[in-house]
Amino acid sequence: MKKIVIAGIIIAGLFSSCQDIGDDYLEAPAKSTLDESVIFSNAGLAKGAVDGIKIPFAETNSYRGRFLPWYGLNTDTEWYNTSQTAGDNADLCVYDTKPTNTQMNTTNNAWAMMYSGIERANICIRGLRNFGKPEPGTDLGYLLGESLTLRAIYYADLLKTWGDVPARFEPINSQTIYLAKTNRDEIYKQLIKDLEEAATLVPWPNQSPNTTTVERVNKAFVKGLRARLALAASGFQQYPDGIRRSKDAELSVEKMYKLALDECRSVISSGSARLESSFETLWRNYNQENITAGGESLWELPFADGRGRMLFTFAVRHATNNQFHANGSNRGGAAGPLPHVFYDYDQADSRRNVTCVPYRYGAAVNGIAKQELGALDTWYFGKYRYEWMKRFVTSTNDDGVNKMYMRYAEILLMAAETANELEGPAAAAPYLKEIRRRAFAPALHGQKVDSYVNALNSKTTMFNAIVEEHKFEFTGEMERKQALIRWNLLKTKLDEAKVKMANLKARAGEYADVPSTLYFKLGTDNVTLTIYGLNRGEVTNPGADYTSFAWNKLDDVKLNSLYKAGVNPDNRQFWPIWQVFIDGSNGKLTNDYGY
Image (cartoon, rainbow, N blue to C red; front, side, top):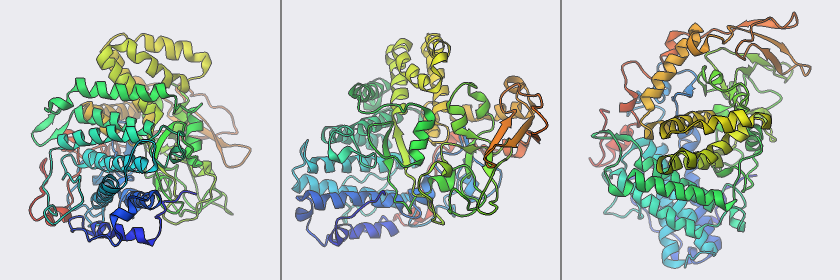
């Protein structure tokens, strides 16, 4: 189905240095076994080299098995489902990560793999510029734009995870083996410049054979990524001297919000992407691995069928192999929505039941598993479901489903946020309305869309509504953490979530009408549960054919595990650089923030 193909064995020689970097990114590169002038003057060979930039995404301890399963938890909407269990796994989520974390402190970890991808991109960018005549409208031009974008993706994830990191925008040589950290402002400025160039080289979705799938970059994604980086660069974040916005005049809110708004409006006016017709359709298409460009997904991190762990990690929990997969026992369910999030949705919001799932699949009998209720404090992300796949997964470690890296809904919400800041709430309203129209049935648009949004008549009320809409739209996609950081709301919203969970446990305040008892029965298919009592006010026993189930398990230990006691999440916005890379840096790298 989806493959990253390297064009011939000779291409591997170009990246012989990168294999070394996978073991230790500080090693100097070997000379290419095939001259760059041959590779990068030929579109077919050059494509093989550019495809090689993507290889580090899928390495065992890279995005596949270490970065994607852990980064982005815990927020005010999502958490690691066993955050209360002390250990290195939980430490990654509860803002108490150590440089010696056993999941991460290896020479082939995500940090090394990101720099391996960057080195591959640097070689391609140099070769294409020197030998390829990469002009707009040509295949070699597209490949340069793709290389610049892939490098920006690696750097974007380094910056949001570690803050200041070494800047490498040229292939490694003997003088640059060891580098100190660079002020992230300088890296952001380079990425924003690179993506401006990439947008001139990369066509819109479906405008060329190169942009017919979301596994290859297109102009809508490039512009969206540039907008995302502009907001991150100008937003609040932890610097070594405290939490603040950038002091660089080039990264001011005024300039970066204008840039982001212009880019988002360019994507919107292009008509090259769109919201899917329904929220459930979006996520069914995703799980069915529909990678056709021009819909809501703008770019996906591409995994081959036997690589990648999005469902393996985040799907609704399956206790054993069953009628839906043979991916092994206890697959999915490593993380889920916070227990109060389901009850924060409007009951009529179509995103609620897709996002928040209260059941799991029990042990299979004769190959068939049935849904069963879990516990109030253990929900699952319904956006990821083996039962929605078309393929039957048989791998014991991977499912092969892509990571949806950006979708059109984010373009609309970034447009709303920046328009509100620069032009006021009336300018933001159309973008927020478009998001909510998809969430509610047409009969409710007058109340839930028009009246609701029109009442947001100040910048403050509109901004607060956008923050809430972001929660309802993106829970389970691990995009929330960086947004909370740049809004300077990380600890504030985490503390609010802890209060909300305490109120839910006590059935007090805004959760006073949440039932403490659920009633369930198996449907006619003898697999699917019919559940009564999840909606507020559903307290009457629906009949003798239902079984009651106590819906009150939310102990204080788990409630308080959102972040570790005694830790201030605002002072732990980043992971530490792993000790193995500190030790191998010839004294150039150190950790900040008290690590």
